[in-house]
Image (tube, rainbow, N blue to C red):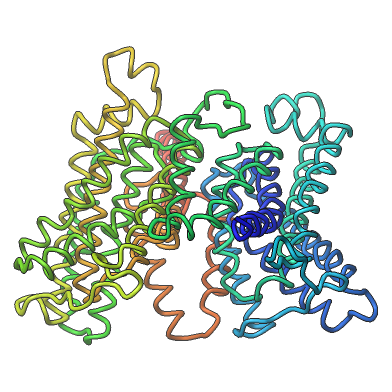
Length: 629
């Protein structure tokens, strides 16, 4: 019993830092509506800077002074980020704000390696809390007891700040209705800046307080951000008390899950998150939001059929791509095959987002399921490659059918978070079910048959399937089903009034997108010759979002162009520089700021303006000719 009590206290200590980070993210999202993917990066910066200050300036600042100063320094960095970057894109679609913060995260990952090196850093123990306290024969670090007390103290301070100050009242009002706060004459610009500063300070403080407990490393941002999203969603967006309760719940599940349910310990928190979203979409302590006037982040213009010139251009580009084996080497063909596969993956998500208005944060689940489907059929059933490519993606279809049924009951960020929860559940199963999936060792030896084994043949196969997938999705877009899907996206009430079953239409679109993603995963398994749980990880889902947003959500070819540019640039940078994430992140941020409609969307806008300009000059030219005559 004493052991379980100490384990409970350890969970409470972990909850303190998790609460600090989660409360900051909840405040930022509640007011600014920014899904701040860089929040984990600020947490990591707080840990690194605190390590430096406590090691090199301990005499001047002291350990605790170094912790606080580190959090303040990162808060200043956060203010600069908000003023220089985020302020420029507050009126952009919300998903582009996610893209910008993801680019910022990539940059910070390389910056910390450049400054502090790639090795883990071990911080010193906190003065006055270096010992342990005996609890019924079990020792618990005194620093953990300090964190247990700190959590409720910070909660009380935040409660007083938001309940007893004018600033807090404005923040709570902005969380409920930003437009009304602006109508009352409140300077939203500085309110957003102050909120962002407080949120970043809390994240950095949470990271700084971890240095006596954990090693500081350059991957700690992605580790914490997933748990923080879970906590914020379970507790309720904008609810500080909800963040505290959810942080305790998640930390205790992590502490006891490995003891009670060792085979499903990683899944537990995501199962809880999924159940909460299904039963109470706005979280345990959150409040239902007013219905959105449009799908968050999407203002999609109606797609139109191709003109004859566009058809010729598409056919010409396909012919040029098919001729690559005539002058490209094996490495170039392998890279091109990977790009073609990710074109399939990106267009599946692009179809779901642009036509269906559904932004999935867990689309990699169906990519990974397709890959595992092929691996099971090829390795365990011994089926030929053609049969595996036809049947393997059906596992992605099955996953999309089950998860999509629950996901389409929600909308906006809640839909996105539920898809993330389902994807993490699938990833956790693949990671822990070692007897079937191989766990972290994966499934090896999934090689293509002799007829597709050469780089040129496999490239032609991937290119042909990619072209077929794009063509089929376009046919679906302009079918009666596609028009019904767009009607549901643009006006759910009107579409329901004319007899369209919106949820069934969206579920069908979800299944279609999941199946196409599964097809991409099936090809990827043969390209790499192996399948790992990372094939369905959150980083791959974010990559898919980046590809779609980079190309342009509101465009026909956004997914195709975004996948080609992002994947080609990523592969090239890795081979050219050790700071590939820094360069790629800067490129993403530049695209978001300079070309908020994406690459294709910006080009289409330029062409459209030129056409309008030429047409507006035409009547004037005609009148001058008539006058001269």
